[in-house]
Image (cartoon, rainbow, N blue to C red; front, side, top):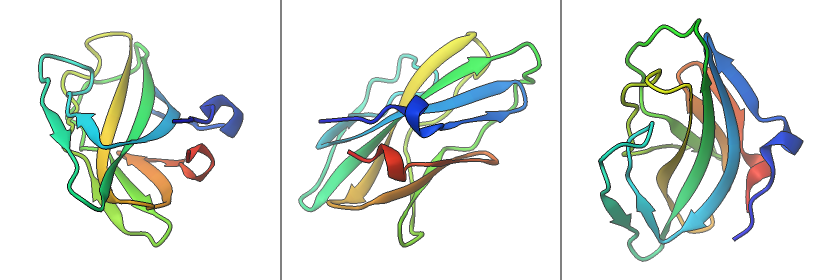
Length: 130
């Protein structure tokens, strides 16, 4: 699998006090459903025929300005604007100063991704597609 560099694509945005950078997009037949930041949840999911997981890796940096609050699960859209949700959840964001998470999204094989949405921040995924 190949992954493009987010730095080259300029994929960084911010929620007040939380710097978010999309680092890569990969495809896989299995995926970990870990919480974000990673914790003790180690459930693994497997695709069904005709599906694959789009794995979107994201790096987070927490500043002192961040005010912990519940965060919605991230979602992605494809090039037809169909939305896909993840089973992964945010847990205790702000408990560590930096962390990375990989969010799995179950999509039909061949789906071309358009954007990742985390709260009010949106990230272009088209340049990061493998």
